[in-house]
Image (cartoon, rainbow, N blue to C red; front, side, top):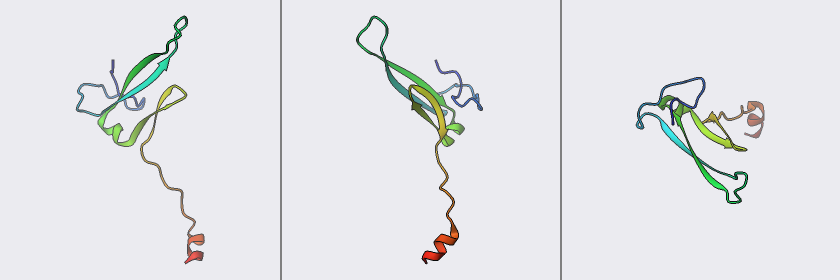
Length: 84
């Protein structure tokens, strides 16, 4: 069950579906003694404020958060001026 925002720095309690964003993460798990992989569906929630800034990312079976927007690398103005 969802209880708090996935962002560990936030901790806003989950109360209503309309506040924030729920992420569904699907994975498969193979249990010992069962050759058929089982589908595992987990739910994560980011509060309204965090969902504007962060996204849920799954890498190597691990769920984490990353910034939603990234910054462009700084442009070397001397190189740009030389071309114009």
